[in-house]
Image 1 (tube, rainbow, N blue to C red):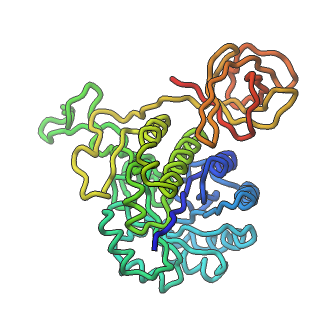
Image 2 (image 1 turned 180 degrees about the vertical axis):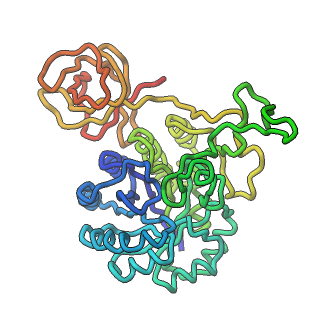
Image 3 (image 1 turned 135 degrees about the vertical axis):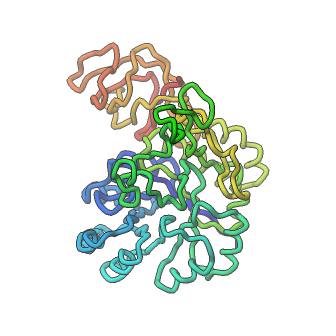
Amino acid sequence: MARHPELLIPASSLEVLKTAVIFGADAVYIGGEAFGLRAKAKNFTLDDMREGIAFAHEHGVKVYVTANILAHNYDLAGVREYFKELKEIKPDGLIIADPAIFEIAGEICPEIDRHISTQANNTNYGTFNFWYKQGATRVVTARELSLEEIKEIRANIPEDMEIETFVHGAMCISYSGRCLLSNYMVGRDANQGACTHPCRWKYSIVEETRPGEVMPVFENERGTYIFNSKDLCMIEHIPELIDAGVDSLKIEGRMKTALYVATVARTYRKAIDDYKKDPELYKKNMPWYLDQISNCTYRQFTTGFFFGKPNEESQIYDNNTYVKEYTYLGIIGEEKDGTYRIEQRNKFSVGETIEVMKPNGDNVEVVVKRILTEDGAEQESAPHPKQVLYVDLGIQVDQYDILRRAE
């Protein structure tokens, strides 16, 4: 049967969750303050989680909570307490990598679906069937699988078992993200959520009889980045993903801004909907998707392992920098006397031309007419991050529209 894939979007905070929902997510995945693999992400308090889940459910969107650390003995008692709290706030699914955590979830909140994280190295249909028999409703494929392998998995697992696959965002150089570099170099365990991304650092080699004589592994004025993968982007291959039997198209990025999340969610939403409506429409709109998707920060693009093993073209040896085309300014809040509340994220000024980014795909150029403080005092510019301001943009805008500036 043709499967209609879910668009699954990451959220680092309540604000970003709401953005993801408004900009087209079918489901959002979030981390709590414990037991998820992004300890440095802002993450959700239980109250934020409760509010986020309520907001998502009002809009017909699901919420999955990550609990995908590889646990040590000292984690287990806390996991048990945490799942008792999650039972009360009713997320739609838990993303789990560790069998012990999986069993605790089944015991404490069996009514919540359990999904198996990519961290569990799910590379064959036997593994999928194993987890199905244990009670999992979904398994996230390892990053190392090709579309052919995913198709073979689909042919050999129960019809109602769901396959989730990463289709966009940062790639990890370790097997399914299970990396020891961070732990070895700075004592921060990637598998416990504290990764410092040493794969993005600059490396040189030293010959042991010539200590202190440092040689770059690949020539460049700043050194080499031998582990630095390009970012994954499968916007051009939605038909192949659907054909392979993928149920959930997952975007990476629980550390990303609302602008990034809005851009990616909106673009993939339109691409999926256009393809479902008419494959020819999807082909015709491809230049728009590619233009939009390049509007958010990224490290050049690759299709990862989907079409076979990647080669050296998938790595970026000469730098570790993101391409950045837009700056995030804020999200539109409630209206007051023709002005709109925002919490400033980057500086902008009266008279400047900026863009309003709308969930339906429109990008509207506007000139900033006025900037007011909460007390109503006029300001020429908005220089202070996180300051609450009211802006007059000369047009009517909607709550959750995003303000950005082209660089």
